[in-house]
Length: 313
Image 1 (cartoon, rainbow, N blue to C red):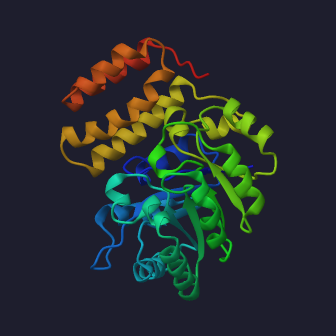
Image 2 (cartoon, rainbow, N blue to C red):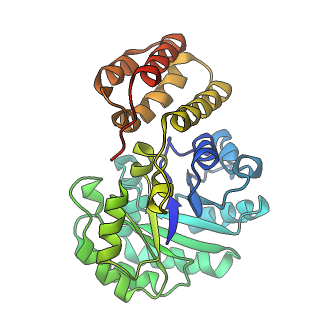
């Protein structure tokens, strides 16, 4: 089974990916949160740092592009190839309203004819492998039949399917019936994405879908950075590993960002997922949430690691 790290905007940037790879490994591909092409044709400072080869050393890294304009995709793909990338991913899954209202991400799925024209031009002019990360549609899973017919026209590197519609966001449960049908009818290799939080989730999925050879995971990895290793039969994270992982992240953010508030925003976001792996975590989660200075935050983390046990189911 191939395991991929999902691109989570604002979370799985290069500092996170590097710390995860160094401490736990286990992933075959690491996807870069989406690049949003701009009118000037330049990468933002964040995007450039995310794709720099030095920041992704030792990892098979796949940048993701968010756009509905073929010329923007083609131009960005050419620039990414100059950086040494041989594969890129098209984001057709982001459910954010600010993205969808502009007809991007999952919002592009509401315009199948435009999507078909987009893919035709992209595959005509891009000399690079292209994968697609998609949802089933905007409102109903039945929308996916015609969309899949479009995907089947093109030689995708792989089709990564998150079997929810846009209006689900991350609620409800993945539509496994729709995924099974897509798996059967897709002419491209299929990767599954959605709600793999534990090795038990992985086992249940593989029992239901033994033909699937690739899984992408996101939120489950935030809650358990050793998840890929555990799925492959390795050990769960111990306190020393989690502390090292935390310290690499924290040091990276302190070096790259300015201001306690900005740094702590990044760390608080992580702890919303990670805190439950500790015993008696709720009081520490509250303290972390209230912390306004890095010095105070550091004392809370020292106390947490010193007094509480790791408990990953």
